[in-house]
Length: 214
Image 1 (cartoon, one colour):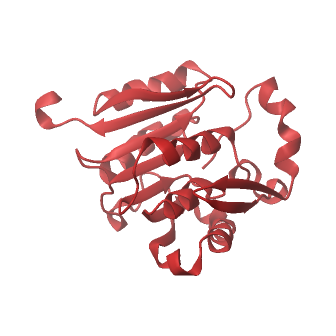
Image 2 (cartoon, rainbow, N blue to C red; image 1 turned 60 degrees about the vertical axis):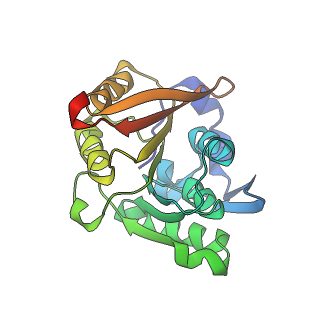
Image 3 (cartoon, rainbow, N blue to C red; image 1 turned 135 degrees about the vertical axis):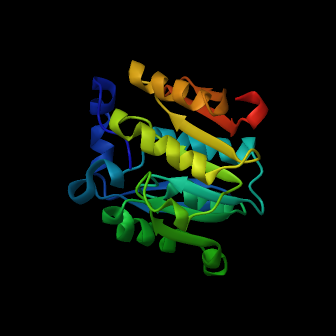
């Protein structure tokens, strides 16, 4: 899953999304991401929240040896950067976007690291028994459709323990986005750990509350 268009600021930047690719430098690697707006729309372009999260991962958290899952991966940029930073990564999205996602992962992960990355289908709230818990759960601009909030929360609860770190990178466009964070606070401690004022992107860190805190 990826975000939908909401405001004139996003629309003004739409031109770059129609490019067939975008290039980034993270984790001492040049990453070339294919984009396919025409066929897959918002799920197949790189959004600011993903870029900001990648920047944060380079400096704000040690992923070496961690098990990581990315939700709603889209182009896979965040999962790719996580793997290059030393994590064992599971990159997920809906079935319709999977082949596109796999292509980006295979093109940007060195052969010696490809065994550390898997691409799997995941529709939030469904088939969760196919997944265990992870050290880190990542999501870039996945808070936007209110009808998915319960399933997204259910998915995060399943994928996490009290030691799991959840990092969500997002713009907060509407009151419903704040409502999702309030829903999370019923089960997790939630704090803002980064804000990029240039692109209005927040990063929130969440960790599951223990039973005594509920």
